[in-house]
Image 1 (tube, rainbow, N blue to C red):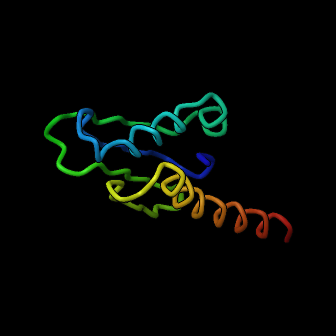
Image 2 (tube, rainbow, N blue to C red; image 1 turned 180 degrees about the vertical axis):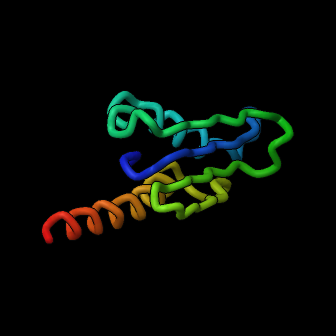
Length: 99
């Protein structure tokens, strides 16, 4: 999931019930498998009670950026959205390498 990601920022208020999916995504994000897929990827966690809406912001290696309002998404949906662009970039890389 992180191979084509430069940086991810997860922002949420830890005591806000709407932050549940952002917290769950953060737990998936920091697993050893994900970290090993791209050790250069910077993961920033912004836990602050002043955060109004939980968000995940992803900066890809091709300079694309997405910002997800995670209040209405599940952790699985966040993962799917982040992975969708990574899979497209992997396909583009595979095509370029095959000639």
